[in-house]
Structures are given as structure tokens and as C-alpha cells.
Length: 226
Image (cartoon, rainbow, N blue to C red; front, side, top):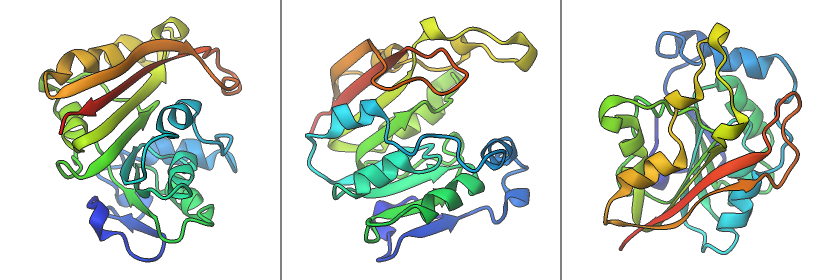
């Protein structure tokens, strides 16, 4: 697996550490493959509104798209000159994303990996974009710190998720939204090496996904000081 942004080739690529979906770290990606395989497309194909609003003025550089899914955010960044490492645990999602990668001229590397156990390289990215990624709280915050450490000096962390007010526990599925990081949790862990620019809840810019009631996002945008 190549998470190094300098390793992107001249062609859009899919770099798969774990082989086919039956061989990925004991099947951790299987539930996500089942979700993506249940329909021809899960998401709209449009980039997330928070990403567009918060990065439109940033100079292109090296970006890490965490949990890239079907690739809309990665492709939007690449078409604006970013060199993108797009990571997901689902091989089906990555194949679907790579198939849509027109007009990106080799600026996206599609990587199958579990970023909760395989941290990205330290200081390698000018933008680490985390949108609606199910990052569970853990003692020591190892997975979270791996993502924070990936931001280069002067680079941007952008973290967006559904507002807690829009989420309810689903006991039958073992889901409790309090088990997952919210932007304010992350802001409190950043320390003096960071400048927090945005830490807020805001109305969604787009309609919520079908069958959901997500009306607000919570957003953290922070810059690692040079």
C-alpha cells in the first residue's frame, strides 16, 4: 500500500494492500462492500458542501481524503489541481471512484486501507479532509492522532460530521453517537501548535441523504502552525 503522496504515478491508480475484499484484514471492509454493492450508486456524486466552502480559497497541494467512498470529494479536489491520496476500506467504493476519475490527469491515488490501524505518513499533506468518517473514540486517541500528525506545517485539517442533535442511539445496531469524535472533541486535543479557525455547527448546504434527518453539520477547520 502506498499512502505517500509523492508516490502517485502519472496515471490514476488504485493501490490495494489487501487484495480482494475477501482478504482484507479479516474482512473489516466487508460491511462497507455490502453497502456499496447494494446499489449502483450510494451518494449523489457531488462534493460535500463543507469541503467546497472551506477549501475553495486554498492553494492546491497534497490532500488526504479520509474515507473517500465513491470519490466525489477527491475528484473535485483533483480537478482543481490538488494531488490527492483517496483512502477507503471498501474495494467496491474505490473501483467505482476510479471509474469516475475523468479529467484528473493522474492526480488521484486510490488506496485501500484502514486508517484507524494504518496511519498515514507524518507531515505529508497540506490538507487532511475527514467528512462523515466513523472515527470512534479510543483511549490514547491513536487513530485520531495519526490523522492529525499527517497534516504538514502550514497545512489544514478539515473535519465535518453530522451534528449530535440530528443523531439518536440505535441500540439494536449497537450504535451510540457519543462513541464517535465530534469536532469540539478534536479541537480540545490540538494544543498550541494549531490555530482553530472554525469550530461550529451549521445548517447543511444540501438536502440530507434519502431516509435521514441530517439538517446540521458540525465543522472543525484548523491550521497547523508553520
